[in-house]
Image 1 (tube, chains in turn brown, blue):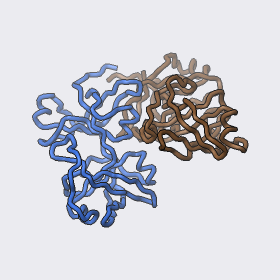
Image 2 (cartoon, rainbow over the protein chains, first blue to last red; image 1 turned 90 degrees about the vertical axis):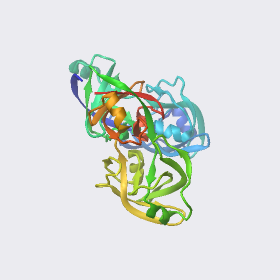
Image 3 (spheres, chains in turn green, purple; image 1 turned 30 degrees about the vertical axis):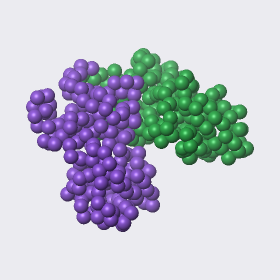
Image 4 (spheres, rainbow over the protein chains, first blue to last red; image 1 turned 60 degrees about the horizontal axis):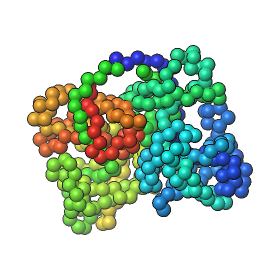
Amino acid sequence: MNLVIYMKIKVGVSLRHVHLTKDDYYLLFDEDIKEKVPINQPGQFSAYQTVTIQANDRHLDNVRVIGPFRNYTQVEISRTEAIHLHIKPPVRMSGDLNGAEEITIIGPKGSITRKACILADRHIHITPDERKEYGLNNDVYKVKVSGEKGGIFDNVFIRESEASFFEMHIDSDDANGFDLKQNDEVEIID
Amino acid sequence: MNLVIYMKIKVGVSLRHVHLTKDDYYLLFDEDIKEKVPINQPGQFSAYQTVTIQANDRHLDNVRVIGPFRNYTQVEISRTEAIHLHIKPPVRMSGDLNGAEEITIIGPKGSITRKACILADRHIHITPDERKEYGLNNDVYKVKVSGEKGGIFDNVFIRESEASFFEMHIDSDDANGFDLKQNDEVEIID
C-alpha cells in the first residue's frame, strides 16, 4: 500500500459520558456542577457528578458528566456498552441526535428519559489556523495505528472550531481493539 | 492507497471464553462437559458449563467453556475486560502462554489459579488445501472492513490446520470498534 502520511496526532480516548442541558442537569442534581479535572478541549471538564444510564432494565453506573452545559443532552457510549444495554445507537457527530436511541439518565435527585444516546464518530479536533497550517483540507481522513494490534481507522472526521486542542477522539472500543491509550501517537494518512 | 484484494472471508467474533485441560475441568466441575452448540471450527463446541474468572478482587461471570479438552488451560478475554480485571495480558496465539497473566477460574466445584490469561491475536483459520487454492502463502495479512466504522486490521495471522473452517477470528473489542458481527464479510488484502 502507498500511504501518504500527513502528520502525527495524539489520541484522546472518550469513555462513556453525558452532556447535559442546564435544565436537564437540575432535574438530575440538586447541587451545582463542579469541575473535577479539565479535559484537553479548551473550557471543557469532567465534573465530579456522575449518572447512571438505563435501558431495557439494564444499566451502567459511573457515567461521567462533562461540562459545561450544552444546548442538547447527549449520552455517548461504546458499541460494547450498547450491547450490554440492548440498544442500537447510531454513529453520529456530537450534536446530531437524528435517530438517537432513547435512554434514561438517573441522578441523585431524579431521572429523565431522552432520545439522546449515540456512538460518537471518530474525529479530530482542530482550530481553523492549525487546519490551514497542516494542510488538512479534507473533511475526512484515515488514521494509521502501529503495533501488534494496529491497523487503519477509516472515516475520521475533521471537527474544526476555535476552541480546540489538536487530538483524535475515539471511543473505548476503538481504543481497546487497537490497544491505544490516552496520548498515544497515531498518524493521519490520506 | 493501492490495495490488492485477495478474497472475502467471514468474521467469527470470539467472546470471552476458556479452554481447559481435562484435569483442570474436573477440579472446577463435578459433572461431565456437555455440548450446547457446535462452533464453526470442526469438532469444537460451546459447552453448557460456564465459569467465573477473577483477578485483583474483580471478576467476570458467564465465561463460556469451549470443548473439547485441550492440553493447556487458557482464558481469552478482550482488552476491555482486562481493564475491568486490572490485568495486562499479552496478545498471543492460542496455545502460547508465554507471559500470560495469572487468573483464577471459579467453577461450582472449586477454583484454580493459572498463568493462563491472554488476548487472542487476530487470525484466520484455514485448511492446507484451501491455503494452496486461495494462494494465501504469507503468514500474516491485512484485512479490510467496510462501513462507517470500517478500516483495516493489521497483523491477521494465518492459522493452518486440517480441521479448520475458513473464517477470521477477532475479539469483541475489534468487532465492536469496527461494528462487525458474526458472519459479516471482510476482505483479505496484502
